Structure formats: structure tokens, C-alpha cells
Amino acid sequence: MNRPDDFPYLPKDFIETAEGLIFAVVSYGPQAGKVGCFLRYVKSGSGWQKIATEAANRLLAKQYPHYLYHSERYDAEFHAVNVVDIIEHHQPEQRLATLLQAEACDEIVQRLQRLLPILVQYGVDYDTLGITGSLLIGCQKSTSDIDLVVYGREAFHQVRSTVQLALDRGELSVLDEALMRDNFQRRLGELPYDKFAWHESRKFNKAVIDGTKFDIGMVHCQFAIQDEKQYQKQGTAKLVAQVIDDQFSFDFPARYTLDDEVISEVMVMTQTYVGQAKTGEKIEVSGAVESDTATGERRLIVGSSREAMGEYIKVIKKNE
Image 1 (cartoon, one colour):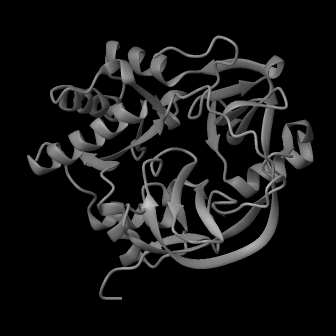
Image 2: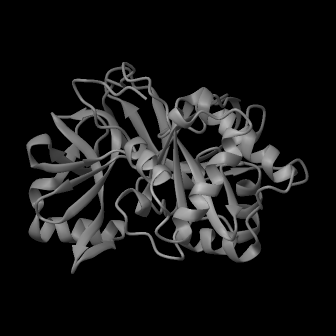
């Protein structure tokens, strides 16, 4: 996977600073010359401690305010790190290559090493894959998930199809209720458990190998495509509309085109609602309204925080 020479930082990379902070990269291009990201791990003793979004914001506000950032383009608060403050750039594809070549140090790495050949036997290319999350920085535990990165939209959907095929053939397992409920609790979304589980079960971006959950996330690699528009918050809204285009539904951020005359696009900034709906389905959406400062065109944002409280996408089934 070839990275841009001028700005090699991609979503799902980690960047580390001298203060003992690790940020997850979330943007494809620079934000005012900085790397757009969110704080995810803090140095604790000899290891790394994961930190929740609100706790991360409080920590930065108190001790490292220079990493807080207000985006004029998105009219939103997140984190950003100047390139000169980065002491290590953790790249998922490099880390995966290292883990696959090394002797497994624990059961999570062993399961990763068993998972990859299952995918590859159906045509998945090793060169399109990487590893993020705790495995990227070597702080995984026995209860950790495996967070795979897939580079390229076509490659990602090939992996999704492979997961579905491997599930059908019994080489992988679906999430049992305990794992699904754990996933539900982590997300803290707005949908009740039964609706959350229904949506998740048809995405085929999560499965289980030997009792360990893994998921796949896309980095689309279309580096030249940047949204240069500027948006301004316009309150919140809830609407019901039909999805007329879902081709970017697994991107991050994900996008859905709607048949609504006033708000024609939903942008999803949280993994909870990525891949949530398909073309032709009617959905109920609650989110933050943004208006293009130049044209007045409106869109809905779902996921103004990782937990997306009060914001959701729900498919309306025919019997509802």
C-alpha cells in the first residue's frame, strides 16, 4: 500500500508524542497543517492505558491544550498534532507484516495468524491489509479484539464477502449474544439492543475466530479527494427518508444520499452507524444539521461524539 509522500498520515494510523500520548488519526489530509486525530491512549507505568473521549478532552484541556483543535471547515472540536511533535508514526500495514512474520507472543496474535490465511485462501491480498487498535502498539490483552484495516474500497468489500463466505462454511463464527452485548455496551448508542444487533448482523464487518472478535475497517485511499467546503452548525433534526445511494456507506466518514428535498446527505462520524443502511431502504435519522456556508445546502451529521448520544440511523422495516 503506497502512502502519499507529502502527508503520509492516514485514518487508523496512530501517532505518538513525547508526552506519552497516542492519537488515532481520523482525517485524510492536514487540518491547518496538522494531523487530525483523537487521543486514544495515555502512557501508564510501563504500558498504555486506553482513554474515553470525554476523559481525553478533559486531559488535553488541563495539561495539553495545544492539541485541542477547532475545525473551521467542519465547525467542530477534535484533536490535532503538529508533525514536528510526532515522535513515532505507527503504521498498520507495517505492524501487521511484523506480527505475521514473528513467533506469536500471545493467544490474540496466534488468532490473528490463523485468521489471515482464512481470508487469503479466498483471494484477499495481504498487501491490502493492516492492523490497528491495541495490536498496533503491542498493548493487547487476552480480551482484546482484532482490528483489521483494509486499504481500498474494492478490497474492503472483497474482505466483507470473504467473511460472509467463511461464516457460511463454518470457518468463522458470528458474534454470540455475549459478544454482541459487549459490542452494544461499548457503543452506548441510541438504538435498543435488538435493533442494534439486527443492523450489526448484516454488515459482515465483524466475526469471531476461536472466541476472539475481529472487525474490519476501510481506508479508501482516494487521497486527492478532499471536501473543501465549510459548514456551520444549524441545530438538530430528525427525518425519515429513503436511501438512494449507499456506495460510501462503509467509508469513514460514511455517507448516504437521501431522497429528501431539504437534507439530501447524511455523514456518519462514528463507526456505530457505518454500513447501517442500504440503497432502497427507508431510514429514520437523527443528527446535527450542518449548512454549507457558500450554498446553504444542508446535511445531517451522525456522530458529533464517538458515542453519538441522541444521534442514530435506523432502518424502518416494512412491518413497522
